[in-house]
Image 1 (cartoon, helix red, strand yellow):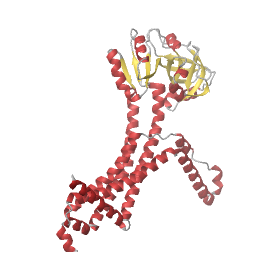
Image 2 (cartoon, one colour; image 1 turned 120 degrees about the vertical axis):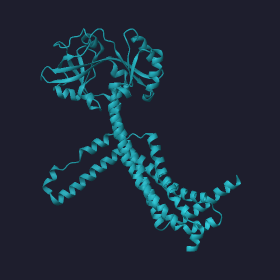
Image 3 (tube, one colour; image 1 turned 30 degrees about the horizontal axis):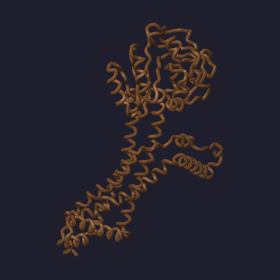
Image 4 (tube, one colour; image 1 turned 90 degrees about the horizontal axis):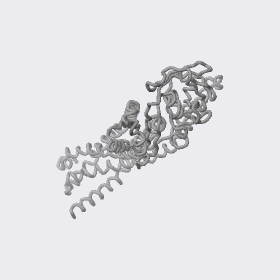
Length: 432
């Protein structure tokens, strides 16, 4: 035990001496540049992934809270009420909503414009009882009023396709339903009471909401409602479905992961490819660290030979240079972590600054070369769109990025210290 402690003290003392000596010269500059490279990589990766998370979660939140829910349960007529009662008292369930859904062809009575739609019948008080639903579904005109059987609330893009406004009359010309419902009818007329906007374009382009009585009236009397379940934690969907099947083994339930598997899979691939591209920064930095550590070992060959002659083992000498690489990576990772979090917190202001900077650069260029076109110059509106996207930092991703920044330097040092095996005390001292 005493031998291990003395070895640790010796390694610490020598590494401190090396760090003090390496404050000037090409080795010191290379070490600082390596730390800067790691800092830049960590900062860039945290900022890029956080913005990507915010961009994707805008879609995912809208889909989960408005469209797919966390779990959809398809009970039969005999167990429908029992399943609903069981879900309402389950500790994981945040909200449960019965709904009916059918595809249809909607026609505006005034303009005659037609558009495919997805009719969803929900409780008329859902906008008050489901806070997340109301947060994701913004009413841009009228109100979410579906108390009357002839009231309907439609998406922004669907209203645009139909040329419909609040107060317009639309006809559900064709609709899918049960066998006792008419496929084609001129009598399914509704008055538009509200137009909504969601952060997912497909919802805006197709969704229309009516109350539950409309479904029983127009979609067929023998339909069984589907129950949309929202959990306190969407990642516990498999746990909830497993417990549901234990109680009702014949009930079919579908998780949000399966319901949106193709779309979420595309988002995951996009995110992974982007992460891989930014990770290339670490590859470049790791190569630089590897080369700088080899150079430092060569420059320190006389010191290494003397230390070996005094009794230092190969392992202890390797640890000296591994510590050097670890410190280089740690410094860069800490700086990058702080800068990355700072950028994420101030992302909105950053995009506004970039917008103004681009505007002034273009203004100066046009002022010199084409002053007649200055009246047509304006700020890039895309920066405002980017600024409106909130950056969402995930703790797991930040820890992974921070750790990888350190490991990139550490592994480069471990690869470079193999150069020590090629040095012998007699050769080095003989050359000197």
